[in-house]
Image 1 (tube, rainbow, N blue to C red):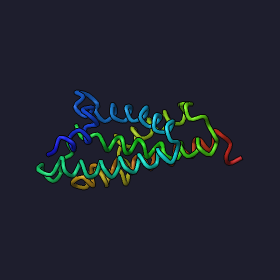
Image 2: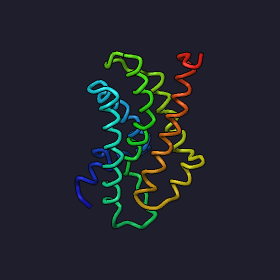
Image 3: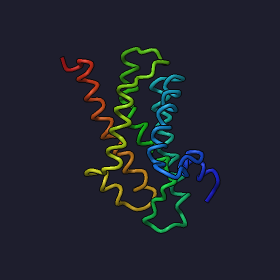
Image 4: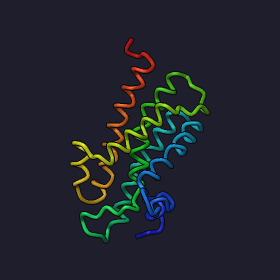
Amino acid sequence: MSRIAQAIVTMGGIGFAPKAPGTIASAAAIPLAWLINWAGGFPMFAAATTAATLIGYWATKKYIANQPPNADPSEVVIDELAGQWIALLPLSFGLMLAGSAPHVFPYPGWIAAFALFRLFDIWKPGLVGWADRQHGAFGIMADDVIAGIMAALIATAAASIAHGWFA
């Protein structure tokens, strides 16, 4: 295992938190997302989300290479960052379309996306549970990606209703 892979999968050590490392990592992903969104808007955030997901897969595969096939170490939290950012993607896109100032923190939507992502990641309904049962880096990353997509869909629907997009 390389130190680079370990640093990536643990998000610089966040994964070694003694309690709730996944929730801590998801919470840490929010201000990072906001900074990226502020710096470059939706295009930069979408690129960062894609990069985090792909690099996260690579690092996870490398990190668990010598572990049992069904290993899902609790310190691996890059999947939480990727899933959380996926949950925020359509909200970032909506901010861009609305012409929002980049420094504004879109708290209701982003907090809802956080709560929904954590709910689906912990509860593991449907496809999230299926992905969680898959082995290797794919299973570790896929359940959070799917939980992020589910959270994104519901948060986007809620934002659509709240902002009268269907009116």
